[in-house]
Amino acid sequence: MKSTWRNWAGTVASTPQREARPASADELADAVRRAAEDGLRVKTVGSGHSFTAIAATDGLLIRPDLLTGIRRIDRSEMTVTVEAGTPLRRLNAALAREGLSLTNMGDIMEQTVAGATSTGTHGTGRESASLAAQIKSLELVTADGSLLTCSEKGTAEERAVFAAARIGLGALGVVTAITFAVEPVFLLTAREEPMPLDRVLADFDALHAENEHFEFYWFPHTGNCNTKRNNRSAGPAAPAGAVRGWIDDELLSNGVFQVACSVGRAFPAAVPAIARISSRALSARTYTDIPYKVFTSPRRVRFVEMEYAVPREAVVDVLRELRAMVDRSPLRISFPVEVRTAPADDITLSTASGRESAYVAVHMYRGTPYRSYFTAVERIMTAHAGRPHWGKIHTRDAAYLAEVYPGFGEFTALRDRLDPDRMFQNPYLRRVLGD
Image (tube, rainbow, N blue to C red):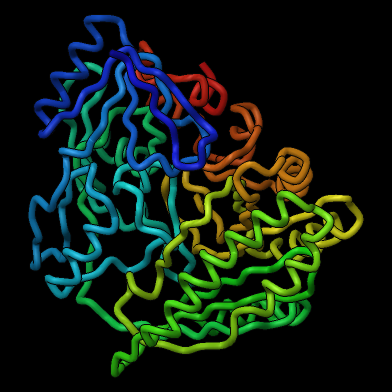
């Protein structure tokens, strides 16, 4: 019997012709070959944390939940090779037990490693970039069912695949394993502190330059932000206290915030007052812990999200335009706006490809109308040559994206070679990459 797959946010549903749960790269390759014989398109789903229909298919849906675990740790090369369906939560915990860590990561760890990297998941960092930028090699099954391993040390063709497939959107093949660079586990000291938006914008360049990892959350309808600065520490470890951590991370950031969002959805006129209260609920705190316990936080309130990367030097203007737009509109925004940064990288379709970037993410509580807000935000972002996050809601198409990605043509030419019959195509990829 056919079953319907839905993503985490409830924005996408699809009913595939059939499903496969391969437990090895060979089994996955067999599933791809059989799909080709039957004329089925193929997509892989991870944890469903993309808000777009990037993983939706009416053909063969591959679930990688048996394709998990660490294959090997190479301490001489300081790498870890992990199966594609491994959740980041399990990878982070396993690495910590081995005294190792990724250098940087996003703010949640529910995604699979392949899903997170293929869509460009990132955190914030002055010098350290996205998850995909930490990949040293990867293995994928291509449209003809062959297994291809690529790295920056391979042949010319393998290097070309590596440059693109680290953020491959599922368009080049099905990733089966990823090798990440790792380093000895280290400590980070986090300083979370409320700060006025005007001060954050005035001091943004200094805050970025003085901290290894800086991010902030602005609460629309207020002049208030919550900032977070993460920097490496010699220790000792001083984790957030159990009671204080539960109050901040669970009660205020999830429990009370869930109630506030529900009230705001039912009574939009109350949103500005709720925002003023929410923006003052979290007080300053400092703690020191291993990386994944500092970078990541629980996110239990469900929402929809749009995120754009703009040139870092443009982000202060973007935020001022965004604030002015909210102030003059009838919109009522209950979720804070998240701002992070990344250095330039060399991945073909990375949102930070070739330029230092700042990320501006806007959210709306699930079930709240969001299109008017997101449309207005997108108008601001595209005026600054913004690049949309591949896994978050946007309306851009191939014509626009070819203008903001210098390597866009290289990616589509590679797709023509690896998947000429578009086995890995779906409506989303047709829109963003063209036919």
